[in-house]
Amino acid sequence: MAPLPRSLDPLLQRCLAQAQQPVLPGLVPFLLGPHRLGALHPLRVPLLRSVFPELRQESQSLIWDAQTLDVPARSARIQAAAEALRAQGAISGWRDERYACERPVDDPCAQRGETLFELERAAFRFFGLMSRAVHVNGFLPGARLLCGRRAPSKATDPGRLDNLAAGGLPAGEPLAQCARRELAEEAGVPAALGRQVLPRGALRSTRLEREGLHDEVLHVYALRLPAGFVPRNADGEVSEFLALDLESLAQRLDQGEFSIDAAAVCALGLRHPEALGDLRA
Image (spheres, rainbow, N blue to C red):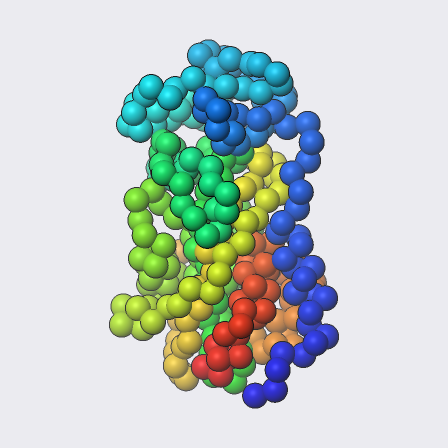
């Protein structure tokens, strides 16, 4: 197979840049003791302090002095604050699923920090906390990517194109296990085939959304699919699947049909050193 067309490079770079936007100044840092964990819009500070009165405001930061609490106690307290915010309509899309908030590390794409607390996933953007997700590029024979379209009922990016499978990382679940589970739920990938999924790097996606600061490490995986594979969605989160050759994929990326994170995952997957091998699936 010939190398990827060089004409794709500017488009792929643009997809990556859209997912890695600089965090705008003016957000209020949220700290646990000395550790900066998130950031939120200043207009949300009074509402948060009304349900979380032990927060103190100092040097334009919100500080939670909870270092002496253990993980369950911290989790219970911040979860209670999030539930109070939900009751006031400040947090929507509640999933009854928790993410882990980690102690900051130098390179979260290569390292994992210890868990500081667990919190409902829908609250992460309100606080501007960093979460993790897995995304799987599915490669079909003939240099095609198998992509899903997000169901109209999805809370975020309804109807936009996505990777073969993707999902946030629940607290306590290993990354590869999450990738295999999402493949089974979203695309009907059998367990034996799902075990062949391979890591293809990671990137940190940041941008300001209506719900707050989106800050997520996207762990990218690749799966080579056999000829004749027919995907079947089992969880209602995908409305259809499309097998896209490189030209069609480039057109849809250029037209903004993919979610920002899914477009970046496509770009990273195609620029990975193993991309040609994946395309030869």
